[in-house]
Amino acid sequence: MRSLFLASVSLALAATATAQSPNYFGVYSGCTNYTSRGTLGTNAGDNMMQVPSTHYAGIGHDATGAGTVLTGFRHVLQDQNSLVTEPYSFIIRADNAGQPDASAGGILLQTAPLQSPSGTGINAWIITATLTTPSTALPLCNTYYQGLNLAANAGWTTDGLSSHICTYYLLGTTQADNPAPNAPNLAWNIDGATMAITQPSARCIRYELMLDAAVLNMGGTDPTQIGNTSNCVSTLLNAAGNPRTFGAGGMWPENGGGRVDGIDYRVGDFPNQSGLFAVFLGVNIGCPGIPLGSIASGALYLNPGGAFVQVAGGSLDTTGAANGTVLPPGAAPAILVNRYLDFQAFTVGPTFALPGKLTNRASVQYLP
Image (cartoon, rainbow, N blue to C red; front, side, top):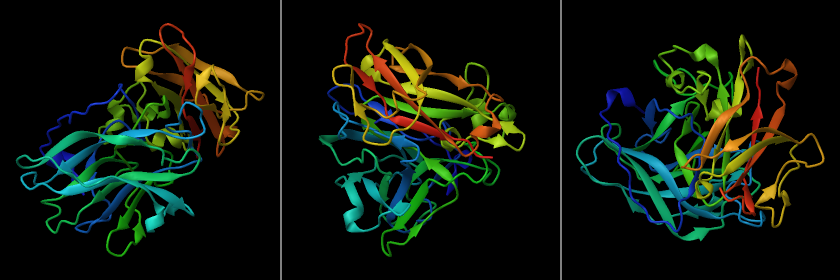
């Protein structure tokens, strides 16, 4: 693992052509403190990020809500010696009893090998890759693992490909996320030679999926991080001036130990830019959800007959994005600890023409 503060990093956008501007789904705080190959070291293998069904359902759902459409990937790739290019591929694996399925049958999708860009010295690139044919392999309802398959490199850490990460907690002198203590670790590795499954220190990895479906992430806000220079989340302020993370801190905010985090939302639907959105809180009915036909593409994952309430709404900006606060810091009662709060959003274009779009379900679990 290499600290970004010790490397001179340049970022460039890799161009891609798509039929329409896509939406992107990932779980990441919004800032980076290391680049890493996880536990792979010099070995080849998978560096992966878990997307648990406890917190997400319907990511990338198709218009009917009965399947999924994945159009590509976006990630940050770093090379410690970019003069020598290296092969890598995108990979998605199924779940096997709470960890990635390391068998050949566990591979839901793996792209043909790509080659890292060339350059001089240490470089990092935001790389967007579009699938020639959209994939339907992404699970609608089940946990899955998304990431990169990396080639071996005996020169690591002075050479080799790696991915940008945000560590949950203080690692060395920095951190870049802010969940409750002992939040589950979403990072996994599979050694390419032994197929051993391991976990590095707790972190989110900056891997994103390119989708036609609208997306929803929930964020955690914590004013106790204001001025904490060791955590770059302290620089990610919402409109109220509270540090906010859309990584693990948004999945497992803290309610205890002197902290009562707030909850924010982030909606993304570029094709409906300058349109409207609404965010709802309800009771998870499981997956697959309820299709709404001509009203909205996708499916409803919240019980319309239960405690179904709108908690936010307004206008999408010119990039199709909106974010704001559902619950301010200090407002969550202790009774919410270890319970799930389930959210879903709806978007519509500026002409209000139906069908609109339903996002994925995104859930929050307060931990003490």
